Image (tube, rainbow over all chains, first blue to last red; front, side, top):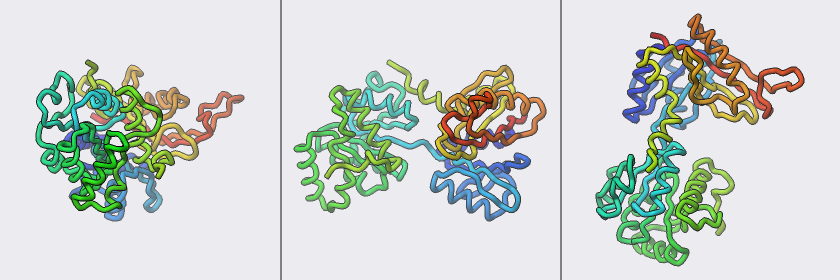
Length: 235
Length: 113
């Protein structure tokens, strides 16, 4: 790999710009494919194929003529937006970071969202609906609400439900969750929308401590991400 | 309090390449480009090796890393990238391979100056 290409790739990664690194598995010639430009020489057909793979985040080998090409997708990391700088968040945040997620915590309450409680994480003290709108959840984003407070959770959920977020979950008992669904229904969300919400959040692994609850949420989120059997909830 | 970035960076193999390059170390990059069956690491997984044999990342559960590092030294020496093929190991013959029954192709290249 040429140093200049490596630098460009690293710059794209730190700017969270999707890029596909395409390598000819013959002589090792390489090109970087972005949505709007290509660095290096590559047949148009391969550029288009690489862009499709980048969009689907599906790296792999392509054949073109007699040459095999490897497409390596560099998409920004998956994100988890955590609403509520609460005790469970303090364990969920480092666990999610270890699992490779970019984590953002939203909590407008100054005594909760402190860097002492949440070192090295992006903390937003805006009102949740504003913060969520700014963050613009996409299909590589999960949203977890943990405050138990409808004033904070609901506005965040309303933005999440209008987005492509791949996982939306809410902490709270079944009773709390039923009331939450009633409020959201009154706000105009239909059953199909409400069905996207995982509540109570997390797989049923008998979690009790904050760390165990964080683990169950991360496990459920992983199952949903990979469409694994554990992702299908009991009715 | 634990520095969560320290954990996250363990997975940033390309970040290691950048750091090593800045220190003037030789670097070879091995990347899983294709898998068959139950191979342990997915396509795109990387192992990087420096001129002294220091390594970060992985391309398998540990079964083929030794052979990949050996090839990485060759690539660092002659600059020619290589496509390596690893199949199911034959324990009787002490072959290098994947005990899990999978197959992988690994691309090994040098970071050019």
